[in-house]
Image: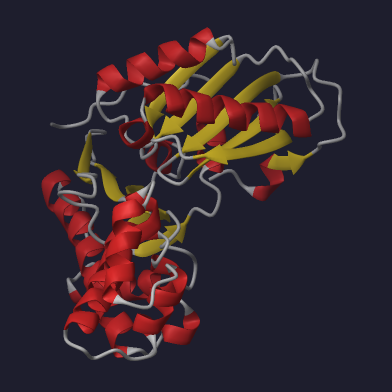
Length: 334
């Protein structure tokens, strides 16, 4: 990652003549984050402005909505920096749902037409976790609304595990955790065993008091995936750390995420000793019960891995932009 000594914040600095202006954008299933920065000749990175907007995964919201969300985050960052227009040189957009090259190409075309930068590059949001990290990091794992992992073998090749979407996968994700909590709530109503704890908290969160209410909330949801994933923080809350139902859901999610890691380890022949895993996403926060259970699950599988939390996903994107030759082509195994 970018070390603290290489990053400064200077929203009041208006002299942009020295160095290259860049955009680092991370866009996922819940939000889009943008950093407008200047990279000097000494590779010093000065953050000028930051911005946020809505979800930008093109598979979830469509290509045009994805481009719009990204452009809105850029506008927000430029406004914070006090710039109405600026000669941004390069922009790197790390976007969820863009493993397919045709989707990346079309999104890059849309973004280029918006004149956000002289050069626009689109990569899957997984890539910076590896390419923008230290060489020792061999696996990147994202668990937010969805879940997916990427691995880098000793030959420099990449492979992906998961990322199948909510219908077939997203195991261990916020959606999967929320779905498990919602299923437990529905089952509880059907069995006539209504109780407080998780069941009551889920009902309160979706403003439901009956089985019919719950079904209506699901049927009427504008964004069902977002609604279901919004229940994950309830399961992962400190107050539910000893709730048997929550513990079971967290254990299942950790086992599913560990399986993604084990799959990549086997496929790319990554040594188990000294493995470093970059983790990101809303449900893998530092000191989260899921993060802690994931470490225990991996250890039980013989993998003593060091989990390195990426708190700000735009920082490894900036790290990539600071490299002399921006790596944008990757050999991802089919």
